[in-house]
Length: 389
Image 1 (cartoon, rainbow, N blue to C red):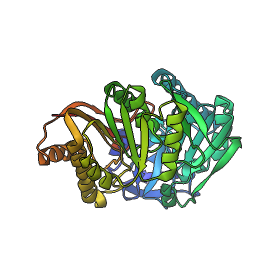
Image 2: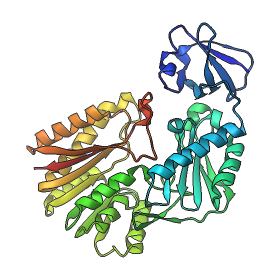
Image 3: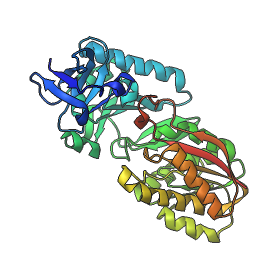
C-alpha cells in the first residue's frame, strides 16, 4: 500500500476529525498507486494516522476512511452501511423516505444513498468511492432488498474527480414515479430524473413546523419545487396555498401531489421567477405565512456578495407580504452562507422594511443528514422560523 505523508503540523485538522486532506498539506506520496486507490496516511515522522483513498487530480487529494489499521474490503463497507441504517432506525419516524447514507457524516466519503420506499437512489461523487461501486451496489441489494436501485451520479462535482456524469437504473427495476409517504401525506417523486435524487428529504422536520403554523392561514410557498412545504401547509389546515417555482416540470408534479392528497381545491401553483413574483404579490391581500426555500445562491466564496444581496432581496420582499404577527420560514442551503451571516441578512432585511422580526427557531437539516462537528462543510441547511411584527 502506498503512503501519503503530511507536512509537519499539517495533520492537525485530520486528528481533530476532519476527513479531508488537501494537496497543500502533503509532503510526499511514497510508493506506487493508481488514482482512487486506498493508501496509508502518515504524519511527518511516518507515524500511522489512518487509511483513506487518494486522487491527485482533485484539490481534496485524499479522504479518510478509518483511523484503524484494517483492510478496506467488503466487510468494511458492510459494517459502515449497517451502522448508517441502525442510526436511521432511531431518528427517522413516520416516513418511508429518508437519507440512508450521508457521505462524510457516515464515514463513507463520496457516497449518498437515499431510500424512497422500496427503491434506492445512489450517488458516487468521488473516484475513490466509484472504485467500489459494484461491491457497494451488491451490499445495498443484500442488506436492504430494494426493488430497484437508481444511480444519480449526474452531478457536476464529479468533474473535479475526473469522472463523467452518469445516471440510470443500475439494479432491478424502477418506475418513472415513486410514491412515498411522510406524516400521512403522499408525494410522487421522480427518482430517475428529478432534481438531485427527486425530493428534499433534508427538509422533513421543517415541513412539520410549517404544518403546525398553517391552520387557517393564507400561505405563499416560494420555490415550492414539487410541493413539499405546500402540501404540509394544506395538511395543517391552511385556507389557501400558493406555490411558486420557475420549473414547469416541478410544478406539474406539485399539482399531481395536491390532487393525490385531495388538496387541489386549496393549492394553486404558478410559474415564475421568485424575485419578480414576490414584488407582484405586493398588490394582493397579505399572507399569514410565507416559506422561502430557494436553490443555493452561491457554491463558493467568490459569489458570496451577490448571494447575500439575493437572500436579502427575497426576504425583504417576503416580510412586506406578511400581516403583522405573520410567520416567515426562510431557508438557505448554501454552505458559505453561514448561520451568523444569514442572521445578519435577515436583520438587515427587517430593518429596511421597518418590521420587527423575532426568531422562534433556528433549525437545520433533518437528523438523517447528520453533521460532523469537525467538518463544518457537512452543515449546509439553515431554516429560520421568524414572526414578523
